[in-house]
Image (cartoon, rainbow, N blue to C red; front, side, top):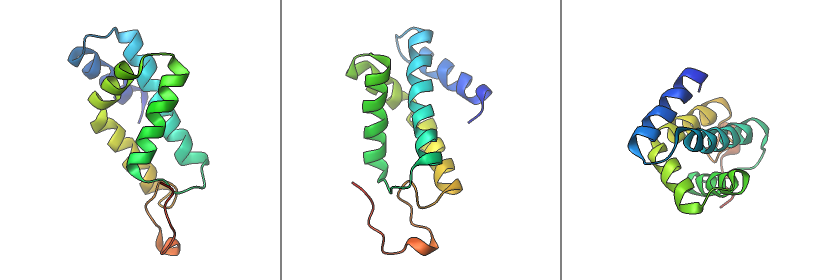
Length: 110
């Protein structure tokens, strides 16, 4: 996801919620950044739901924002979170829980 796309996501979520643009931007940059970092550096397998829960908890802790606010913002940006997840799977199929050809039979981490 490039800066222009991220800006569009921030605009969409800001318009869809009652939260300030800076708050939305901080949450989305933190959450999407961690998701991308995991795809780049992790060697563990993750189920989609477990990964998104981790990103939510990470974002809550890093931003200091209340859980309901973070979950609402990330939920509103769910379409883009899924796009980032799909991009990550395409780049490194085994990392985020999608077995590559050599990972058949590997157990994903819950």
